[in-house]
Image (cartoon, rainbow, N blue to C red):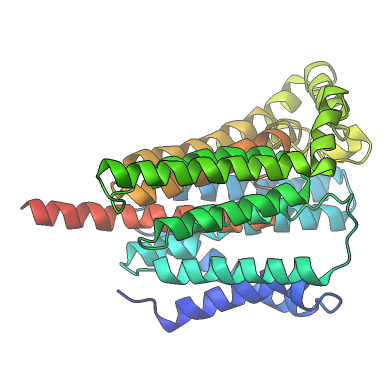
Length: 382
């Protein structure tokens, strides 16, 4: 089934909202209007998704995670007021954006809509805007670009291209080079993991010739691409020097932040605080300003063991949905999404990165497609 007009409208609203900062630069007032529409649509389809008898565990887990964040947000602001209201609102908005985009695409997929081409066009259009932003802004050679993570989130979308495996490899290499150029250490490590899964997906793709020559040629191309990316990293002195700094203990303050938060949870928290947390956005009051840059420590401090368990359930539900996926390419796309999400939880942010809406959106679509593909194969067997 083709997407309906409202589906196209939703993707247009999303695209304009997430790209307006790059295109309009100074004037970002349009975002205040669009964000209301995005939240309204996402929440409506959350209710619609929950009303389905065939909803997946990942949808229920995402709903519970958003619900607990909403409860703690009200509690933190009304009762504890750990941080200025604007900061708490921004954090809650980011969490809501990064998670709630899973609902509309899941529902549409469950209703039989084929969004492959629409999702691919969305991702490629987003890439063009990022490249435009890269070419039109003034940056120095010694510059750490946080947008490095943005390029990574486009990699799983590349597998939606039908056939043309060599084009997929080329796009993945291009995205990897952009990440290396960003000199963001966490992003470089994350893209390395994503590339490994991407290579496995290409090698196991049934579209590729099964004969030895075809497989060998593809393997050679992958090896050459990997060597090229590695050399580009080695020749990028600034990016390379940032990894050398890790040997000297320069982790952008993460060592202090992690030890401070762990010490606070173990020694300065009551049993109630260990289980239920110190309140929404409590981390900055403990670290003196910075956030944790680690999803698990952020949740352990703010929401306690309850938050960690709920979040782990959400992440595990994505993995469980990927294992049950019957379509080979969709399965690999889901594994890449989980790999990116999982690695980022350790030394960056996943649920606190609003650009991760792309990952949850893709996960929702793949999860929603699983039943349709299962029913189609069952019908063919009969």
